[in-house]
Length: 356
Image (tube, rainbow, N blue to C red):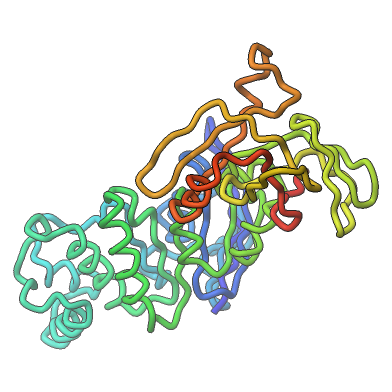
């Protein structure tokens, strides 16, 4: 399976200009609200008119502005799950699932019932959507999509309205339900954790443009830009200047780090994830920054420390902007409780994000 989507759309206040090409089974699009994520899905599904481009799924052209090809949504063989599932409120679960199959027949009814059984919905076929739990509504919506045997499934923020407990449960359930689906699944979300678990390949979207893409783990390991690093959860940034083939000056932190690998040209900033600092007691080691705490927050499963580089005075106009975050899991906190706060925090070379 392969998705090729070259989409360009302009409105009065927004411009979408992206290219997605992937043969991964599970694709993610990460971006903030208003970045164009849902517009991308609607364009692929055919429910959003676009200005120009080409959309192709597994070699079949759905849209091509040059040849004037523009298949109607029902002809695209693409399943689209909306954020609110979009079940018909006055129709039973069974009729909702059959809705995508055209004129009702006994054969289609049997096919819909088989799909409901697959999604553990037998016995609920005569209920209305309003009588179902959130998880049951999601399963009904997915059954309605799957019964049409699509080549591509589009998931639009499927967990955004749920609390943390339900979100985790339904992510696992969704993964299980899609395990045997032979086509591609494209999910958009503003949650980096959801997409890290779900996707094999990730596209990071900002203001209607793809700013980074690649294997999901690679994008998180090397986001390449400040914008992509922020979207993947990095909390700490500093201006950076290359001072040698293997040395880098972190200007805002008053620290020069020594590296074993060659530092590419053009680096302007560095990032460091809040969970990756290594506490050091006693003598300073290479790549260490003095730990001068200014605040700490106790959370259920971790403790968050905030500290200021020693080259920034507390009354400086840049003091608030320079505060660095260090997040410590409860298990690691036990050593700190035993030994006291560290004197230094060390940066692991492999965890330093080199950004342009």
